[in-house]
Length: 320
Ligand code: NAP
Image (cartoon, rainbow, N blue to C red; front, side, top):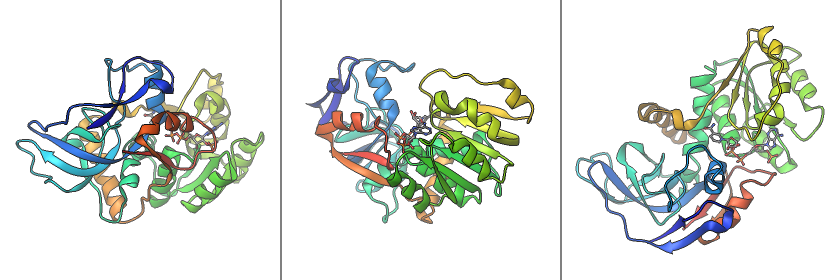
């Protein structure tokens, strides 16, 4: 089979398509014939060698794939060959024609959900779910600002928050992105490229502030997020690409909280629980992953450039 291999950390050019041996499922494992692969920003940081978690070289990137079950190992009873599935991490890397997975972290893909949509599930939706419900303890009736709502995690958060009865304000940096955020359920959309969007964001709550802010770019926004929190409001830092100055008094005066999360910290049992909820959301169609671009696996370097560009529109997916 073909797989992307990275032999040295560096720019997108270190991603090479190569012929590698076929995979075989061991006990408790599943081999998935991959039909679509989700591209996440973290895969660019890991490839560049700037992420705290560094895989041993050479490696195949990626955690999020969807396809059909090709083989199951001893003891696997949840799946059989031909089942449509998506993965929530892989043992072998998702940027490939086959992926070896722990069967516990493979989930069924309902018939009406495309493989490309399945590949858009794990990192974006599990992150949005964990940030909203595990970290921020979101409750129906609360107001949430999804700061960066047009990308993979943001669209997932809009759909999840809306389905849970929150009042949702989302931001995007392009007209197309703003239309997407509105179409996916935000009650109001703002442009995070506009200099006064924090004032507009506060006005959108009638001056009360936000119970929750999900922050995709904390190094730019955190210092201005905290002053627009409501009493007992909490920010959850999801994305951050540098340092930021905050005034801790802004947290103190409102009994606020600055929380943060990394999906890597979710335990296997948390992931199993989160994905049970996500599969239910796919089944009842409250979750509808948005695929903005499909790119051939051989052009993966182009996907790694595109995922870091502005003007996000849902997910970028690779097709083997
Ligand atoms: P993505 O699909 O590339 O989307 C990025 C989002 O950030 C877009 O909505 C983009 O909007 C928005 N953005 C750009 N400039 C912004 C600004 N100044 N203020 C607010 N938002 C801004 O990426 P993603 O997969 O959704 O991930 C979002 C971030 O979370 C990334 O940094 C990623 O590494 C991180 N992340 C962290 C975890 C974790 O476990 N903590 C998990 C997943 C992702 P426009 O392009 O429309 O401007």
